[in-house]
Amino acid sequence: MNWIILVVAGLFEVAFAFSLGKAKESTGNEMYVWYAAFLVALSISMGLLIKATQTLPIGTAYAVWTGIGAVGTVLVGILVFKEPATFLRLFFLTTLIGSIIGLKAVAH
Image (tube, rainbow, N blue to C red; front, side, top):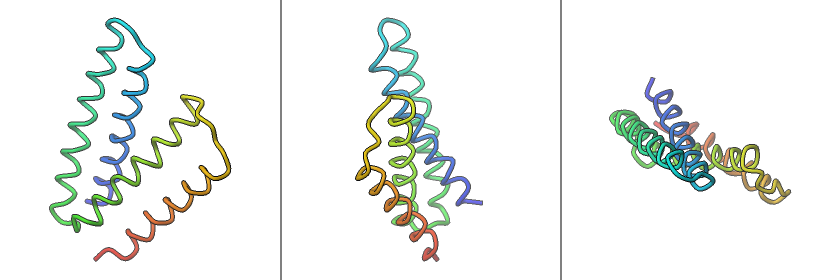
């Protein structure tokens, strides 16, 4: 169950990064709404990470959490913010995904 919580926490990390990207593109009150969304997503992500680390090893949990956030944020950047999807970028994204899976596989 705590692995599921950890994955959800990682998805909220993607949400807070997405909110920052949207705030950067916005002006006026809309910008403040996105910053508020950032704070909410950040709080939820951290709360879930705390919950997950009650039973998962901290080193593994933190690495998986940041990895999910990194992979998700790169994908959001490519798909939503039209960042470049170069071969090397996708190659290293794939190696990061492999590392996350490997850490999960060897966790106690």
